Length: 410
Image 1: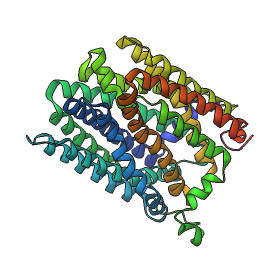
Image 2 (image 1 turned 90 degrees about the horizontal axis):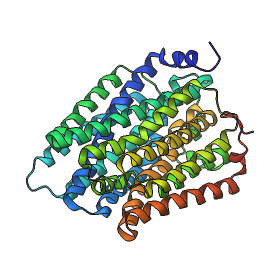
Image 3 (image 1 turned 135 degrees about the horizontal axis):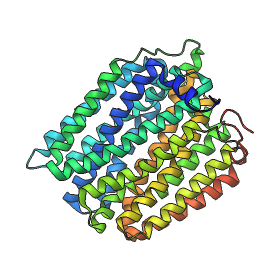
Image 4 (image 1 turned 45 degrees about the horizontal axis):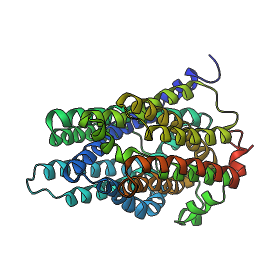
């Protein structure tokens, strides 16, 4: 067996706590991805307004970012499995709330936004605890393999979650779809209970452990890490189109089921790339590879703006997913390698703020731009801005551009 391949992946999967963590994460992602699709289609059917779709991301992002810093500090000081279990319980309650609200004949869209805000609160605490749990479970030597498996599991769930959500919504309606979300989150809780306890890192400097802003200082003092997460934030902030996919599903005449496939397409491409990365050697030019991948993401986004057929749209979204997965794995490996155990929660929260800004606030930007510019021009604008972002980061972050290894600056 070669040094890179099945041997390393098998080593990761033989770790019982990591295996249960991965299963818990897959079922939780299935639930959240399905829920995101159902909420977006339900709100779009109620309003037919692009801005209403963007507000879903904004509401969740504002709450997530507001609590992310104290959540990371909390994760570093407390047992990790308990935090994950509690937050998944809150997400289970959110699924139940969506069921109850949807059955209410006087439903207002603002109640749906309120539950979305509560999911942002739960995610703000689950994110750093999950990141820290995974890294405390896997030996440092095989971080890259664990990052690829994490990405693969997330992408598998991101394929089936939206596809299932669109199918069940079209077949039985939103109540049945939310009911499926509830059952999937319950399965996630089951596997979380099977995970081992992960208390705070033993070797912690007391003053560092009490400093809530240490994560920000740590990230901003590391040029490679700051460059990587800034690149992802601004690229997805402008280039992401997922929030307005209900509009494209409507324009293409494919309905809820077609929307499910459109939402799943990026993950289909991403899982192919994640599988390739799981079995192949690490990148020799990690920084340059990251920049090229994000540039390709922008190019495929521009091409998607001009697509007029359902199948071509699926292919281009899949290519976006392949490019995005490369950046996800490289960025995660950089964070894993540079971050100490005592800082993982706070550094993950900073990363979560950047990712939350790009994904959720990016969703608001997409909705607002679509309302002001029109759907196609807004996507074209986002792709061009992504390419400009790559150029600026390559210029302003030479440490990232010169990064040769995923473990140390080149």
